[in-house]
Image (tube, rainbow, N blue to C red):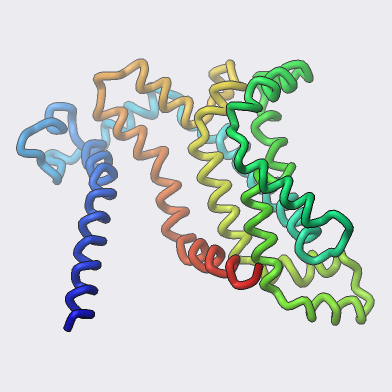
Length: 275
């Protein structure tokens, strides 16, 4: 009986928290289909009446969201590809190969996770600007080809270590090289971890506001996050249009997460099987 009451209490708390967290999202979406007079009616109306799509049309005409989306996708595709490629290669070296100083180097890489990004912000900016890459996509893409962050390397390394080493030994006996083991054995068995990192990379690049703000000055190269901020600055009182634009930006993230949440749980759980 106690266990049943405890489970019911947990479910009630979780439902309450879920409603609390999803309420702002529901408010944003319902407001995107209303005119500005309806948004702030008290008590609030949760179903738009009348239902209108004009907010989305106005948002699309007030800012070139198509161009912003294209810029974002370019950065996202190359950034995600670079992250998965280099992070898996580094993790393969740290998990499947034995070499002197391996654990020490891995510890140094992990220590980078404790270093705040603002510490290296100015040196990185000066470096990219000196190389002539200011106001280009290069500073937003190239770092992804260096592992995309220590966390990605760590996650892949932990996942790779959960794969039996006997597979490597059998492949070596059959004459396979390390490149073949990496591409034909490790990667096909790590689809869930790859999907997890791909989703994390997608979320980061899609929502990244700070880095494009620092490195991009030409409005034709703005990403969606910058474009949304520009729209809010110009039409600060047009909340119905801002809500429509925000929905456009948020919707792809929701779709990606809904389809990928299974792999996120599976990938994260598998990383802790073997250390």
